Amino acid sequence: MTDTVLPDARPDNWVDRLAPRPWRPWLKLGRFDRPVGIWLLMLPGWAGLSLAAAERGELPDWRLLLLFAVGAALMRAAGCAFNDIVDRDFDAKVARTASRPIPAGQISVRQAWGFLVACCLISFLILLALDGAAILLGVASLGLVAAYPFMKRITWWPQAWLGLTFNWGVLMGYAAAVGTPFTLYAEGSLGLALDWSFAPLLLYAALVFWTLGYDTIYAVQDLEDDALAGVKSSARRLGDKAPGGVAVFYLASCLLALGAWAAGGLGPLFFPPFALFVLHLGAQARRLRLDDPASALRLFKSNRDAGFLLVAALIAGAWTG
Image (cartoon, rainbow, N blue to C red; front, side, top):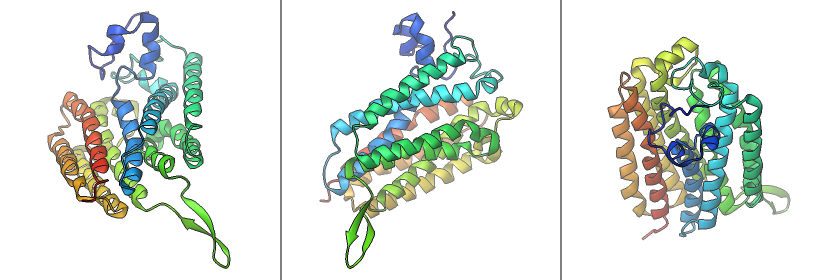
């Protein structure tokens, strides 16, 4: 078995440098050599936790932050394995993905299923440590995860579905910190009362548009190969208008995040890190070039920093002055 550094992984990534050789295909199946995806799955959960805490004027619970970090790493690994199982024929035709463990013959489909199940079982144990509403939301997210690999076959906007999937953690994080969104009440007759503000829904929508933007940037790397393989993407659909489309997606994200700030009653300290978040996204849209895949990958990876800026803004918003 030979080792191959995947094209969108750093040549000096920790897996190829430090991991025992027999472990490397498994770690690469879970994309642990490219941790940016873990951050992008984890940060929405942290945003939901931070928003819920900020509404109460508190800092987020560090134990919940840790649980969401571990859960994000495991579920991202499971999602990548499932994606590679479903897309193994497509991956073999695309230069960037042909050296992944399954199409490269390093791991069999049956072995990949075993890896996926193991990650899901451990993640489920972590999920059981959360509030009941968060558990239900976590189970519900499996439908989004299972459907995602098929979206590139049926719609030009699989990036939008990824946004719905990757940012489900906003709702899970908020639920873990606050509890169930509905309670029964009795005022002459039984009914339901909404316990949540609209802030988490607005924040979820904001991050869906954020993902639509950054994953369109990511898809720029594969424009030619996707066209040959018949894979659909927002980058292909937008064509030369992709930079403008990314700018529109990011503008929508920023406006909806402002709506979450207002709906949650957060304080003015939200604005300094949020302004940096806005500038970061604007710079990405301005620098995107369709003929420079390497630059597109760098811009995509920089969204880890953008996500941390937004989480910092939510945490800072706990101080109302």
